[in-house]
Length: 181
Image 1 (cartoon, rainbow, N blue to C red):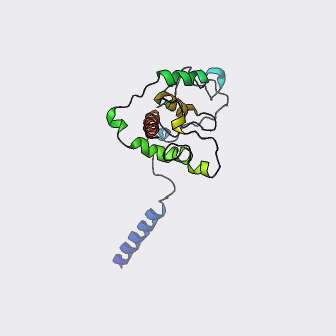
Image 2: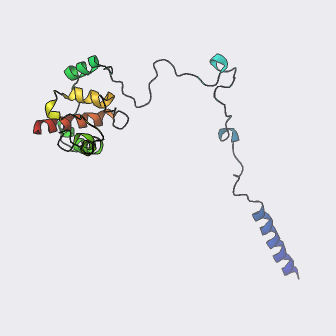
Image 3: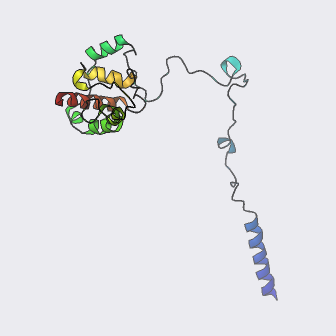
């Protein structure tokens, strides 16, 4: 009889302990203020911040992390200056890596064509007209980089899709295509 009581007591304690566990709520937290910080709503009144507002402007001169400033402006003058003065920082190994061709085939071939003759798939289907051949253009690595950065005419900027290093690789490949035309 004592054995039945012990088994019943053991089963009862097991059920009691397992019923108290809640999978949706964590167990005890050590310093819960680290996990559950005070949430501030933007643009609400707060006396601790300058201007008594939560939403603050960044400090003047702040740039985004990873952003590389580009010193030439988006104008005809900036284009001409980049064309005359801007030189590629690529090493000889980077120029011959094949990465420029790979990037060109992803971002440029649909309009400019595989040979750089301005006869890509979108031009053949008459989605875009007037895409120039590289052979007909007076271009330098600086002018190509500038156009990739800001865009020109119907061509949009590729600065969001390609890093500065990748744009230099594409510019180098475009000059190789031009020499083959």
